[in-house]
Image (tube, rainbow, N blue to C red):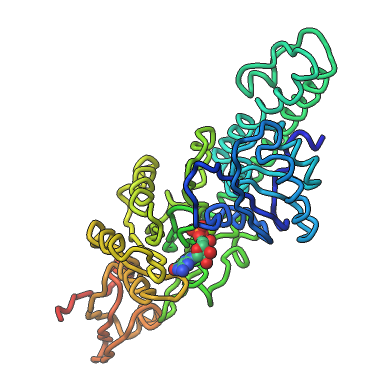
Length: 439
Ligand SMILES: Nc1nc2c(ncn2[C@@H]2O[C@H](COP(=O)(O)OP(=O)(O)O)[C@@H](O)[C@H]2O)c(=O)[nH]1
Ligand SMILES: [Mg+2]
């Protein structure tokens, strides 16, 4: 049943990327950057890229049979498993291309669906992705078989179609019914899985309580994953210790002085997202909703940078993250193409930090700002407690910078520097006198 297009996953597969551009369209010099970031996001290993000019869209193969033959050779040479198109293909085109190329063919929307499916974690997110998948593949399923004979009752919404009655029986119709049963089987299986997922989510939230959570947002290819890796190079994937297989994109970020935060990567915004996928895309941003701080990464070397930044802000507003503490990062500052545009971006976003995830430029500045927000700024305190109160003394030694420690007959007086956000924790200690020292 490989024609059911369930097998769109490209994880760990060697992929060749194809971008077909109509002759009259403008040249692109981005080397399929977005598709590359998406493919890697889905776990594929990109082994080759082809940007192909075509005179027209060929109805059966999109790019034309000759070009498809050429891709077949490249698949052979690279021992590739999958060919990913930057274009949206019809089911018939995919089928035809798979026959000529003799490898799995995936189009851009399918790739995006695959990523979303891999990232959705809550019940709601899962259901949304599933719905998007059905919305996208079910009508294709219907069309795929309807050429065999006329199908009644096959039209309509994806769910309606799956439970709808069938009139006369023909070859295509029988096949369609089998496929429908597969769809409903899949839904049942998913529901069972969701029950398990719910428990894991609870565990995850438990594990994260009280930790400072940072979330990377921004367009695909902006450099979010690179930034996360650079910032946490010495850090550990949190899943190793806490969440087993649940979240592969959350890492521990350890600051100088030993403070720790959690930093999560997101799929990112996608250019020209098909409308069926918008809801499921938003579901993948759920990580952002629970974060304490957002790092909004913008690729400032892209001519489309301002538009992307504004677009991302709009969506963050829609999912009610608009008021969340956010640092805007103008990334790829090492490769800006237009100095004029770079300066313009700095003018309209004066608060933004210009960074390079690749060269490490200004990442110390970023770290400082994050730490400042994390701690709420530093303050100096004089703390007086009973000399016998060992708890407060060990807390201060472990969690603050102790500048001075004096003893009187019965008391200990300590001067410490700590983050404003630690104050609440400190106030939980009984019989302790706290005074702020103005510098
Ligand atoms: N020159 C340069 N390239 C970068 C920088 N940050 C990321 N990249 C490149 O941009 C591409 C996309 O980066 P990635 O981290 O996957 O983006 P994501 O989709 O936002 O996670 C990769 O090829 C990176 O090597 C940077 O600061 N400078
Ligand atoms: Mg990424």
